[in-house]
Image 1 (cartoon, helix red, strand yellow):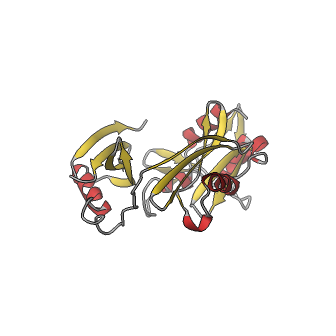
Image 2: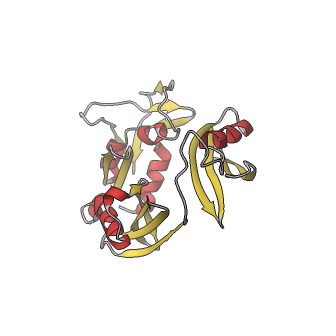
Image 3: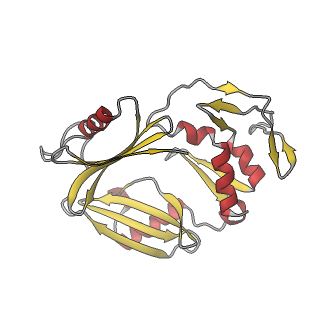
Length: 246
């Protein structure tokens, strides 16, 4: 199955799980069942069923059509699974899913190379991505005062790239500023949402950019997307961009 075909199909239909994860916290929404909507693939009508084999109708929410991702996975010949530990929907080509080393092995390879024990590492969610025609696991973790970033070949386990930096770095707490040096995460969120009061916070991360401590994040209001960077010391906006999600 062509990667581009899978991506196009999923983008067209949407997905209940991914749609719900577009905000930082779960929330209830009002959607409309549409049993009159039919799905046609290459000229053939296709009945959408849930994991129990029951017929289901598409949902319409906020102008977007949603269908069960597991059912679409079968139709598109891709493997769909759920990682409860990271609350992540994982999609692989069916013919390559069994050949990948897996996230756990990718973490192990990164830790061994960095000479860091798992008990002293704090991982961010591992991402499976494409880099120069290869599938790679993007592995990022913190240990002590360092941040480690790895790209590991998803098929062979070879390390494609790595670095570690941010000396004298401590992850800021969510409630207070770090020793009075940085504004808190809550303050950064307050500043961002002050510019877009009706938007929902999707992402907010503490990072360094060219030696400057920043909060970078994203807000969404319907199909409007806001990307921002805030100086973590002064609270001033370094970047504020507004875009329309087609």
